[in-house]
Image 1 (cartoon, helix red, strand yellow):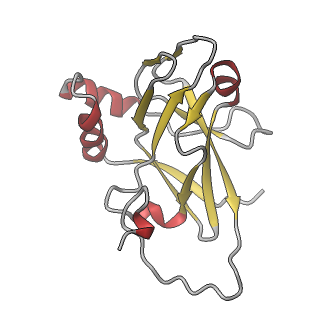
Image 2 (image 1 turned 180 degrees about the horizontal axis):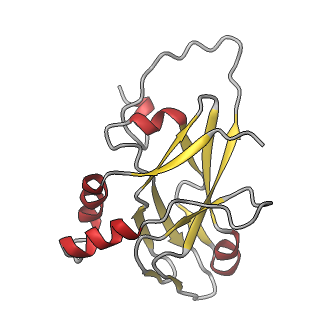
Length: 171
């Protein structure tokens, strides 16, 4: 098995700034404590393909609601690799928990963006059975899988990334 990547926490400043945008109810001390308790993604077993990403805070999602979660994590990986994010299987199966963009695609050059390559996940409870999803702080919520990819023989991409969602197609 090739070792091609390493997870890091984003800076405390980056995490706290990201949290303040959508979660003004938390105090500075709450946010600092959350940051200190962030756990790097890890596999549960030797045979697991996915690295579990853990919720930095507790949240509940009633059916039809959405939440954007700053994970506090960034991924450094070799070129020609991508990190793909999916809901954890059990949460998808039991609650129809979904990523709003279906699959999160974290490119290798995202690590060097101005936001430190901070990985966010936007989750929706799409339950048609009326089930609320309760996620405790420190619980696995999504899983990431590293995959190698190829490019076309006539590829001539020279652009440089500086941002996240949709940044590579902005003029």
